[in-house]
Amino acid sequence: MIDLGESDARYVSSSILSKMIKEYHDKAKDLLPFLKKETNFQEISNDQTIEKTMDEVYRHVEPIVINVRSGDNQETLCNSIVTNLQEEGFLNLDVEQLRECEMKRKTLIGLEMIQHLHRDKNIPASMVVKMLNKIVYNGQESINKFILSNFPKQIDQVKEFELNCSKLAAILYPTGQGSTVDISSRELQNFNIESLFQKQSRLKTMNQWSSQLFQEKLGNKVEYGVACGQPNSGIVDLVKLMVENQGYTVLDMAKCQEQLKASMGTEEEPFEGEVPVANVE
Amino acid sequence: MKLINFEEFVETMGYSGYDDEKVTTEFIQYLAKMISPRVAIKNFPQNVFQAKFFLYNGVVPSNVFSLQCSKDIC
Image (cartoon, rainbow over all chains, first blue to last red; front, side, top):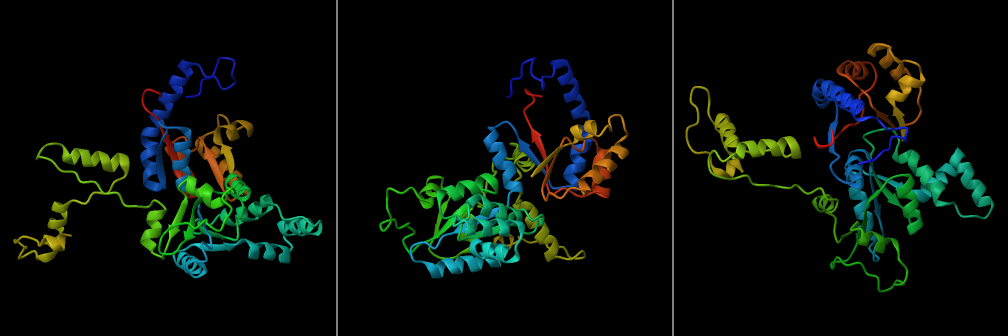
């Protein structure tokens, strides 16, 4: 909660605040159901830390950006992952190629890059991020899944990208059969991108491509809950609350059986036997 | 991302006291001139009329967020 003193320009006295809240509730009574029906409406709980609230908002707004590393000499698997991700609707952004294109087309960013190169300087990460920003936030809602190739290579570049563009959802790291990240040939003193992402549980190893496994790695697991109890113990009410407040979908076995019965029989001869469990499943 | 506060827009453009139709029309026209691919609008719509008018004559927003807090707070 933000504590504002009377001297603060944003201070609102409690009586005015009460009026504003009442006015909001009066209007929201009709407005919220309308928005729920007509738009992609999301209710976000603010009874949590601001970081968690923002994470929830970002999940709906931010594009999915993934970096696929070449891993421990797993070029073939890396290429296979990229190809499969492209089939799943991801757009591969090869930063080196994009940079070349920008310079060739002599766009504003391209010209800036050429100037930097003429001064014998490396192209700064901020410039690359500026270029990526325009692609990642292209304004087309359907293009919101990206694979970053050849960028970022250093932690500074990761920080720049996450600060001024988008959060990296994960780094996919192709491994051999052991699902381990081999660091034996690397300098252990260097805190590299893999170490950073491992620490934040965002380094995901893959020893083969599997769409389901990929979704699970991104945290898109389906969570199941079983509501059971004695008759009249409030199962229906509990389930209703879970649907309304937590966004669960109900799978009601009894309703499934009824639907199957209806489809198995006709109006003249309704199906009267027991529906096989295998069919319901 | 560009942030537009609807209340500030109304105040700075001198539309205070105007009816919902006029204000929303002006707001749609203001948004139409913007180049930024991502715009966040705060404090809008304030009622069903503004919402309907905006959706039917302007654009359907990608996401609408409503922040909820416990009754102890408001």
